[in-house]
Image 1 (cartoon, rainbow, N blue to C red):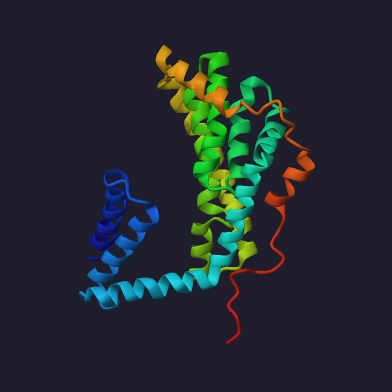
Image 2: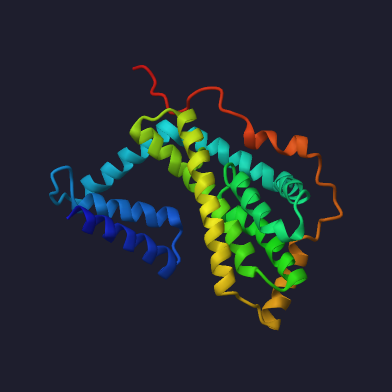
Length: 256
């Protein structure tokens, strides 16, 4: 019963976002309400008003625990993107690597930027670099593309202050620093394994873009790099917002 309800919630989320083109927030709230309506603690059906009341209560409790931290992390991520500090970090990570080792640099860049910046922004920021590398080499497109994905997704899924790891840590009562260290270690290992898998996939199932797709990639890359003549600033100023530790444990419960 429980697994069926969870599966129903997942179908509602995917169907609303992909099929109906709803905003993810609305889709998630709807799915939460449906799941809450299907069962309570005893696995019994509950009425709709009570179901959405439980969703609102749980949402408010989550905001009380981790809402401010997520908000400030989003502000930092947006500032990194708007100020082009994220681009400066990417360039600083790519410089020490040869062109053949650029996919490994993209894994690192995606992982570092995936900590303060949401994954969709990281992907859009790095994809012009992947296309540019393919334009120069005409090979390993799958590898460079999946290198961005494995680095960004592992950091976004496992390393706070992204919402998922914070919510899990708050629910389990785990210390923030312990969650951060564990996320970095496990996420780094998972990103490494993902890179090996990407290299294997690229070796046996390479993808070559046709001329139309190449022209579109060239246009997108030119548009994404139209400000390259502007200074990016010093990397010493770009990195601290990413690596600074939290001075206090944001998951600690207030004494009441």
